[in-house]
Image 1 (cartoon, helix red, strand yellow):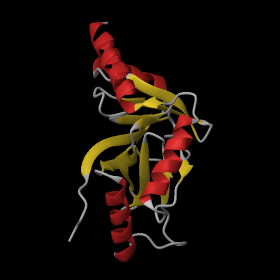
Image 2 (cartoon, helix red, strand yellow):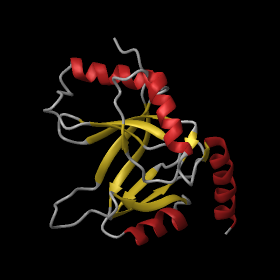
Image 3 (cartoon, rainbow, N blue to C red):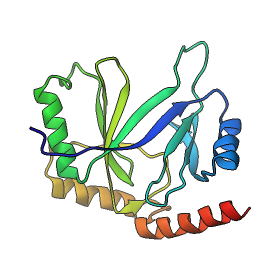
Image 4 (cartoon, rainbow, N blue to C red):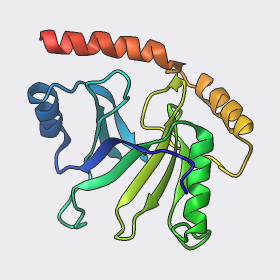
Amino acid sequence: MRDYAVRFSHIGLYVNKLDPMIDFYSRIMGLPVTDRGLLHGTIPIAFMSRDPQDHHQIALIEARTPEHGIGNVNQISFRLPDLDALKRLRQRMIQEGYIKEGVTKHRTITHGNAWAMYVHDPEGNQVECFVDSDWYIEQPCSLHIDLDRPTADILAESEAFCRAQPSFKPIEEWRDEMRRRIAAHDAA
């Protein structure tokens, strides 16, 4: 029996060239860029959304190259209601054998604006399960967290980390800015 609920949230796509994809999803589909930067310090990435509740509905990663044979899908992402639900889902995946410490590739991180667990489904597709935080910091951001620690400790450390970032703001302030940005984008 599941004691957590997941909801589909967004998708990440590998792309050949970032700028034409941003142009299409922005100019034609109406999704403004919410953040843009370098993933792992080297890989261009853009986040886009039409919904101020979602930091991104699409993540575009300029890493689809013929020599790497990478397909289109970077990840399929599911939102959970809270950090304890994410911890219960992780325990279920361990019990069911989808996560084997030291064997199965998985990671647990904070993005500052969310806590996430990355796992792979039986055919190797990356699945992100995440919980939104109450804060915004510039993306991309990735810092390891230990989901076996007490929830209160994870929350306190994550908040301190976020508040130390120059781009820190409460998520509602960021969402208000996004509402104005989307309205300006639509008016252009």
